[in-house]
Image (cartoon, rainbow, N blue to C red; front, side, top):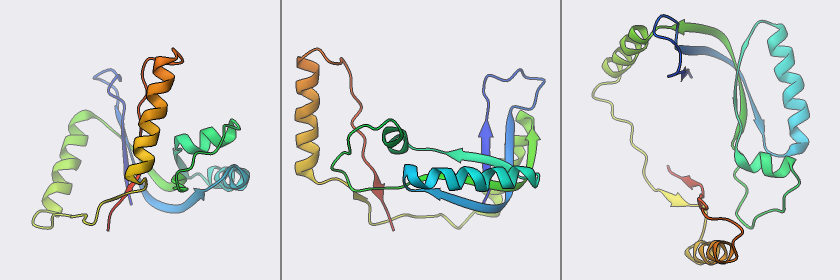
Length: 152
């Protein structure tokens, strides 16, 4: 696994990207109760000189804030990834790396099938109705209704 992060606001003469490689550990955070152990393990990795990429979802933030649970099925997707290597890349290097990846995987088009939402049509309609009530009440002016999907 590799992770490429880009900073489009970086000045042209600076490395705008970081390419993380050689995954050493993946820490899954599926509830606020597992966050402490994950942060401790992350600290241990930092002490070993590893590099960290944190992928934290809104649901973890809601749980940490003590917001009420939604009726959606749990989809734990918060992770802390620990990598052995991090390379700082200029824009031209990123383009070259992306071209190399495309060539290495040409002819092998990854395909995901069996897309399934993690929300029923009835739950979706009820959520839209609740959002409309909040907008009509003046509680908000815009809401982005999001839900997870899975594929095989």
